Image (cartoon, rainbow, N blue to C red; front, top):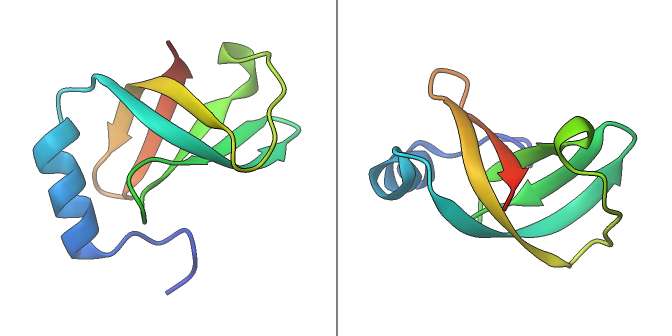
Length: 82
């Protein structure tokens, strides 16, 4: 399993707690030209896209985000800044 694949159990727990969106703390794992990869709960990656977020951050920095969309089938999460 690659570092970006979410296990079934972790994904199921994440959806049970956050299916309706809401605000969650995330940790920046990597900055990219198009945004930041963040880790929501351990094992659940998310994308904070550049158009929604213009701040620079460093790996390890904590940010507050709102879940913008959940791609349940592909186990992907898009987030926006709070």
